[in-house]
Image (cartoon, rainbow, N blue to C red):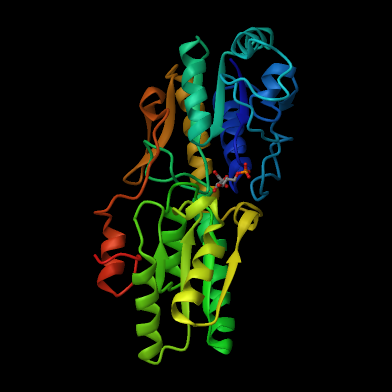
Length: 339
Ligand code: F6P
């Protein structure tokens, strides 16, 4: 069999570990031929590919980013810069021209949606869930998330000392798109006092009251962790808006930090290396068994797969009953509401 691997959407730590997991298992265990497709689905339009061999897959386990490159090119949407009219048709033709028997699509929600549509068009697809946002439906966790939690946690840890020295309120904005997983996990891991999640409505008066009461109790500083997807008026920047509101409503000296792309860069954590390797190896197994139209997933610690048709178009968000949120509330963490 000849298989192709591509990575699409935003990059994250662990993609190379996944490429290596798929590629090495496909070559060593199943005797398959493997090629890498450059820059997401764009590589299937302009046919930029490279052979992936045991040699070329060596030494990439610990590398951040993706050796294949990535893009946000969406085959089923017209986008600026498109070089062909019927992108799905060209992709189908090129899949045939390349002699592919299967295609592994490493990506987040958008990529898995596209993967499902390509499967419906007749391509043999296996999806691999990756993103720092951890918001892919159908899996308990995506690789990239643990590394990003580590980075964000380290950043928040560092804010504690400077906040304490200056007796300030520190607002830090972390990524996560419309999901609050990264804010919740890094916020709890680093002892955030207030955590604002996109999934939960917050009230600035409650946030201000909480901060003033902390100050009255003699707490010298406070840390406010904000998910980038929280609702703010007029598309304002979340951290800036929250910091300004706090300063105005409490008079407490407040500063903001926007962590940005640092959260996506660098070497994957050991846990992500292992998860990505397990996902990759299982993708090769699914291909060898002809189980297409599926996405590799982790359910209660076990690697399994789910139909791509169940995944596409959905997002895994934090629900109100989330046990971690509940435990945090019981310990006095404020989520900006009265619950
Ligand atoms: O989905 C991953 C992610 O890093 C989000 O957390 C963030 O909102 C987005 O990608 C940024 O995307 P871009 O790379 O297009 O700026």
